[in-house]
Length: 293
Image (cartoon, rainbow, N blue to C red; front, side, top):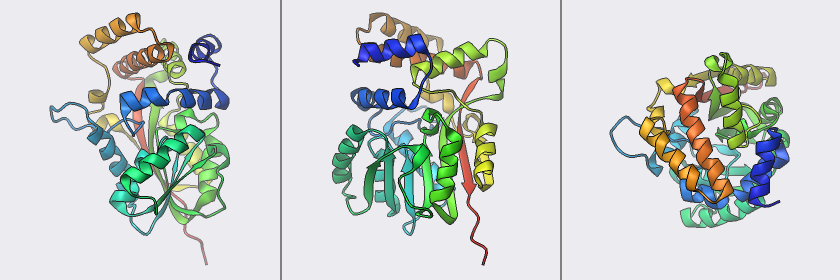
């Protein structure tokens, strides 16, 4: 399958399964490196009048890590780690040991170069596997983090059960993800969200309440969900203005590369969905109870 066939498949079939997600993440590596750098997730944006930068993404990693008090004593699992940007930053700044998990071996190979660049070879290791069957023994980690990966998981409930299994008693779960808002069920909203999901190879966006329910059903307690529209300048990171959307439409019309064109369409749809109040970024915290003796 080449890039054009991949794009045509998701446009025609619509349905996104695990194999399609994996193929997309194999093929989008050069594109994501160009557009996003080493962190493949939304940043934590300050309303400071400055342009968006990689520091925003670094700030998001710190924000999520600090929400569960990550420290040097912790063993951390980053599920859906991409090429290991967050894992390397966590190891360098917090001194914790980090295992990253990606379903794509090509990402793991690039991560090995990043680990050398950050000089964290003694703290970071990247593995290949899927969130629905984490390749680790029970009670292996103190902390499990995710940065915009569960939206791509076909079965998030299985992921949360696996997360609960591999965390030690007293373990902490935290992350951020793309979320459908409560307004997503309004008439006319569903086609916009479905188009957004196809453009980013997402099976379907979930609501924050869905995530919290799935965490509770997996066994987690002490959960917290926050809509980050009220916690940071979220719109700053997306193409929401008339001028930005006009520029994207022009670029889409002249783009010869099918995968880049689909990505540009996805950026346009994200801005439209944010403007329509049917899309947001949510952040989550939950805990596994201490063992009763």
